[in-house]
Image 1 (cartoon, rainbow over the protein chains, first blue to last red):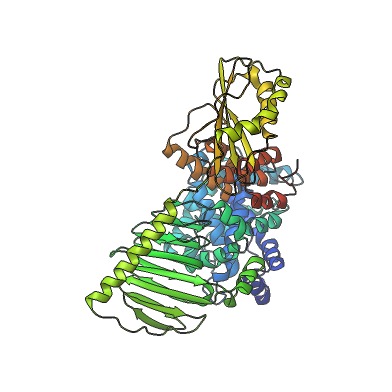
Image 2 (image 1 turned 120 degrees about the horizontal axis):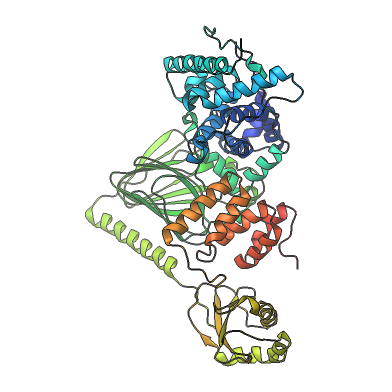
Length: 186
Length: 440
């Protein structure tokens, strides 16, 4: 079961149409509705890397979304949220391909108000995800943390379904091994 | 879909922090800014998504025009956007276009196909035989397809519609008429689900969401040659406009001396003490009587107080104003004797700000590209630093640097760059950030 399977509610049709027409209040609603999943997605894809770029990329995602929005078709194959996550994912992956992001940096422990055990687990997961190859990391985060269906992940990453499944399986196995090696027990 | 696998650990422990505040404000501010660079990409689902986005950006076209006033540009691939302030030329792979002033164009190139949005203005296109050009004229819904052809596409608006564009979203009513003139080759024009062939030597006009009318077929070698001649004449005219220098006649040296003479008593107050035997000062008078004063490389750090003082004195001079373009004088100051010697008029060199040598053209291209990437990604301080590396040697970077400085809220630098750029309309950029660069 994905860790964050619940998806943001879609904007209603009227709000989307207003946003498509350039209504700035509707733009604001759209951004505020989707900024959390977009930020979380990019933040996790950047595990162990240049987190200072995350905010810039979130902004850039929405800039592109708003510019492209008039061409987005509600009757198309992708929901608005999946379409937005597609833009965010591709932006993040493009950025991650820059050589300066190759080196890993230490991940902080989890939320301070969590128990020590949970904070350490968070840190171990983050480090395990950071070490995943980029292709596996994207599939893993989209599935486990964004709660997307395999078909949606395949569309976002332009992969076939079997590739998505195999990458996800390898990512899970690698993370499991990484957590076990770090002394964590399921 | 059911999961058949699981990591076996509580993955919810790794929580992402909440997004920082102010994202919506920052994004909306960026979207309503003009497109500095149109390099963008999006999921394939909407291959023409950039078109409408571009239209929205036209809404603030005044600033865009000021920023994007390049005269020539190579753009062999990818995507981009230009809003012209003067006649300009673009090379998009095997497709060339001469843009009239006040024309907006966005493009995406994939292989040999160039898909263009031309929501406003007039452009003459030349498409190689192995290339395909698709022009969408925005809200009219007309599409022009050409290959191996020369054609002119004119998208005209009426005045009330132009006002509409300036203040809010573009609507279908914004464009009054699209005119397609074909000089060479065959062109197809589609509107309201009807496609017509437009052969060389003919013209077709399309009203918003109305089908195009099939033009009369022109046959005969003579007619085709006539069309070709028309095209060449137009091409020459466009070329002439692009190359035409701004005619500014500088006032005579005598007039210059007359202007400078009243200032002579003020120079001793500068306690001039030049360390070099010969210090030259270049005075550039630009539009609206803006006076730029620069000093030669011999000026030493210890001369700086004198330099500042002399600059202030010169900037008080009442030079003859010019409406456009600029003229300049070079003034030589001898050691401790700062008197006007020979106000020689010479062709305008770049105003010297820093004695370090210029980067190569390739390096300048890299600086510009990296700066624009940083600007597009919202890294304004980084963009500013990048553009400043090339401002001295590529004056158009000053506009970008100014934009970055405003957005980075580096207002002292923005003020300096605003003066350097000298376009009053650009004050809006900093004003949006809460700072008036025109303030004394």
